[in-house]
Every structure is written in structure tokens, then in C-alpha cells.
Length: 249
Image (cartoon, rainbow, N blue to C red; front, side, top):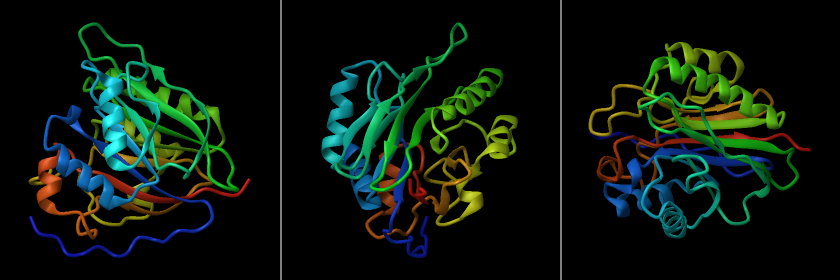
């Protein structure tokens, strides 16, 4: 797959944040390709899904943070059951961590939210949540409802995740009725996030509450330093990169 260069992303500015959402499939694929993709996207925050959960989860989260020039802010172990939040040192101030394990049906995977309350220099406080929702439709809808509950921590919030649902699903529509769907609001780059070798569906995304301005959001095909070979080798999802602006305090 070949893709033309994308339009330039909006540059830095007061309250601006560059956020990447990425399902990394427990680091089972080409780790060096994954590191190259994340570094080329130059995010301030990274919302990871499927961080390793069962074998040295904290150590593997620390490895990914170290190799990508970030630090672990939330998740990164059993407190969130897979989601992980990484941040570029000095980019944000962490005001609190609100990881949350979710109720689960017998026989299904444990799920959770990695959530931190953050502040940019001069900005109002806001939450960022990384999530990976259930494959079971009924359980997943309940998790969409719990996401809205998680957003009550602060007036402003951002959610990035693998929702395991298309935009026409009832849970996605619930979220989009209350929040801004990043790619629909400010489309940039590619739309489809799965599968990397032949993307045909959008099941990953970034959402933001009213009050946060979405300046650009999409899959970073053609972004300088991001190669299609690395996107295919890194994991079984494509990343979603967004530029958002948080209002002043």
C-alpha cells in the first residue's frame, strides 16, 4: 500500500497537545518498528491498548516508555488490565491517577481504563483515558456507559482506544452523541485502522469533550518518518494521531 504525504499537522501552540492512540498487541510483533512509528509521530501523550498484562507488565511498560522517550503516567500493570498511558517528560503535569478495573462477564477478558488527570502549562485540568473495549456487544455497551462515567472526573476529557466497534454501532453512537469523534470532527490522514495490510474498518479512535478543540485526527499515513512497512510490521492495528487544544485555566 502506498500513500501520498499527508497535509502538515497543526504546529505547537498554547494548550496544544499531540496525542497518539495505538493497540500494540502485547508487543508480540516487531518492537523496533513499533518504536520507530511512535517516535516519528512525536506525541506528547500515548494511549496504548494491549500493553502486556501477564509477564512482567510493569517492566514491559517501562521498556516501551524508555525506548519511545516517554514515561509511564497511568496503567502499565494490572490496575487497568492492558491500557497504558505514556507521556513525554515535561509535557504535562500529572494531578492524579484514576485507573479502573471494569466488571466482567464469566469467561471474558478483564478490561479496564488507564486514566490520568493532567494539566498543560496554563491550561485547565483535563483527563485522558486509554481503553480497550469488549468483543461481546452487550458487555461493550456497558463499558461505553462507564467511559462516560469516567469522564465525570473533570469537566474536560479525552478518550483514545480500541473500541472493537464501528462508528454505526450503538456504543460508538452513544459516545459520539456526547463527545466529539476526532476523525469526523477534523479529518486528517487515513480513516481506517484495521487491518494494517488492507485497512477497511475504523474501530480505533479519539474522542474529546466539548470545550476541547480537535484540530486534526487520523491515521498517520505519509507522515515523515512513518513508513508503510513499519505500520504493517509493528502490530495488527494502525495508530490514530490527533492534535487537540485544551482551553486556558
